[in-house]
Structure formats: structure tokens, C-alpha cells
Image: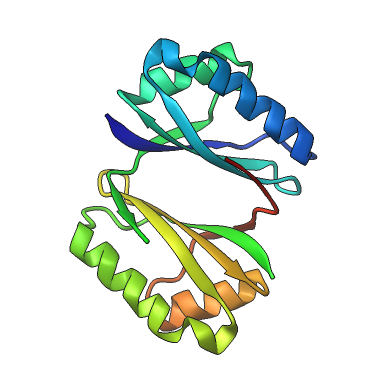
Length: 83
Length: 83
């Protein structure tokens, strides 16, 4: 398992409610691929959404996002974290 | 105060130690601009680094990153968060 940051580019105008709905759609099916979406951050003005997940592969992350109706534009493994 | 996600594109080969050093360089001076860098995630292969901060403006985030020696390539406010 590894950490991934994925980025969506085209979610202009996203609201708190829509972000919550999208995140819940991922959570509802994520176990099918042993993925867990931990957090997401959105910028309604630029349309960027960043999702942090723990997953077996980038492909597994994408399969969940695709089935939930919001394919990611970029997915990067982020093996290093600082806090 | 608002949340920001900034992205660095050119940190290929970054190590855990270098990420920690870069983050500490930000932490050492962040108070000058009322910024707080909360977390950072890095992908040594693509060179992408994502930093999550709380700050008064994107310009304040950039001033700290510039003084610490690592200007951000993108800075986006992320007013929406889900967990």
C-alpha cells in the first residue's frame, strides 16, 4: 500500500456539498479496490481538486474515481510525507 | 486566514531528509508572514511536491517559499476540505 495524490482540473464551481457527495461516492466503493480516500481539498475558482489516498496502485485509485463518475487528470504516488 | 495547496514541479530525486530540511526551512520563517505549513507530500520520481498551508494570502505563502529557497510553481486556495 502506498499514498497517492490525485488531481482533478475541471471542477470549477464545486461546492462544499458537491465535494462531500463526490467523496462519499468514492468511499462507498473504495473497498472493492482496497483504496482509502483520506482527504480532499477543492478550489472552486480554478476547478482543482486534490485527493489524498492510500491504495495498492494508481490504477486502483483511478478505477474507483472513474466508477464514481470523476476520473482524475493526474495521479502521483507520494511516498514521502512531512508534518 | 485560508488554506492553500501549493505545488512544486521540479524536485526530482527528493529524499525524505531533503523534504524534511525544506519543510523545516519554511517553518523557521513562516511566522514572519503569519503562514503555517501543515503538511507536505513528495513524489521523487515526478518531482512533484504538494504543500498544504494556512495563510493570509497566496503571496504570503510564496514569499516564505522563496526565502526558503524553493519557489512554488502553483499556489491554489483550497477553501473546501473533506475528510
